[in-house]
Image 1 (cartoon, rainbow, N blue to C red):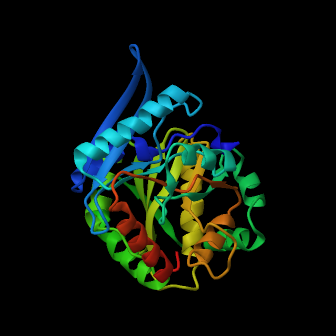
Image 2: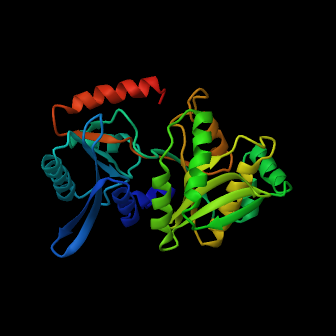
Length: 322
């Protein structure tokens, strides 16, 4: 099963540097037994209007069956929160969303967060199969549109140039207005390309028709997986299935790099057709693959003021239909 060996880039050195260079304070913790490193944890401090807090995205990397280590991890979080004067710590570990894991965090003093953290519901495709097998595993409509796109005179450029961050920002702004979500700053795209590309762990994929850029995506390569992390597309040329062409070429390129899995990143948490991410979910799942639901983010309150955050975020989630 794909979820047996979690290895999120959200705990990588590069992700720490990306957050540091975009203005966040970061901490890197290492847990030892004697001289043996038995766990790592990236913490990110955010000073937000809803309350100062620490984030642990996609981690920590520890043995959750080691009760002593888990207890030490939690006590370390409390100590860090006290030193940094934060109201809570938000953790989104790479643990499956099971009753057993919910119980584990409840017993450790955590409560379900009112908001999600990064991609908690994901769609992952096994790309060790042949191209023909992958095509056969697609939804019929998706397969048709992929094949149709091959005759549309489209082209894919692959780059590590952070100058494409501006193009991505402009297209993402157009995409976010179309689908009703809040986009990310251009600086984040620039730093992500710069940091991961240092070791050839990121590429920008640009889909063009002639000189016109129709869609663009940052793909992060980490471990045996490729992640479809940030993207944007134009609302023009709606009759050309260029988004399908882009995804197919990304899959083909990641196969060449020896990746085992292609992670489409976030999807809707359920099959509700009225969910704001229903459309993008239908698009991603059409390529075939497997749904993986990570444990919903958990909060460890470290101040009575945390409940101000809880009320604020709950209200915002309801208003935004998240």
